[in-house]
Length: 342
Ligand code: SF4
Image (tube, rainbow, N blue to C red; front, side):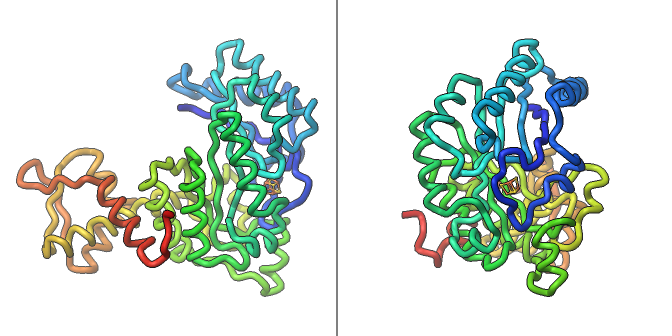
């Protein structure tokens, strides 16, 4: 699947969340006109090897918060692109309180592949302190409506917002799983220039997570979601080109997702090592295992070594590891004391 991301910074947003500055995150000063969007989309399409499996995505704003005629204009713009054979479906991000029957009736006439609902947290204090435009009930209502229209939906969660805790983040991941989202994107709060969070940070009222802490929570959310069949389609904030310079503080890392997956691989190998009472692990020598269990820049191998565990890959006498089964085991451990999964 190739995605053409079209950024419409803050289009349709009625408020400004404390962590958000889509102008700085996307590098776009205003939201672009249709012709410019068309040119961007054609350019993107030219980069793809597989030109048959392409979708248009509207990100950076509250798509269903746009006046209905403007939303319809964006959808018609997308249909032009689809009719010309460049793409086959449309996806977008939006905020839960802007999902209504009227808007979903309009949307159901178009090939929508995914509606990504910006939830960020299922905790009321976190939502309020982050100046989100919705509360937890709006998320439940939106989910009900999306299901009644049979609309595929994903959710977006964040860690490290004011009043957030590890337990609240894990509960949010569990809620996403229980509500039946098909995908989830997770990113830690990063202090960006021009945001209220930056002002709070500069006044000493907000302390961002460390990279280590953000990763420690995110890998646990990842196993909860993955174990329940939810595709985690991205971990970590996505910043393009020079926009990295807009980061003031916080756990930004360009390979955040790879690092979080490396943590999962490390935890799996720790489990295997203690289960088998072995400090020497021999895994099958194939590309999938090598990539996953070596980790980002040998993260897994190096950390195991520090713990006195050696890892090798071999064609014979190696241990077949069912990664999915171990992810289920990790999920059980992570949620063991929380009394969850009703
Ligand atoms: S997080 Fe979403 S709803 Fe909040 S200001 Fe940014 S684009 Fe708008």
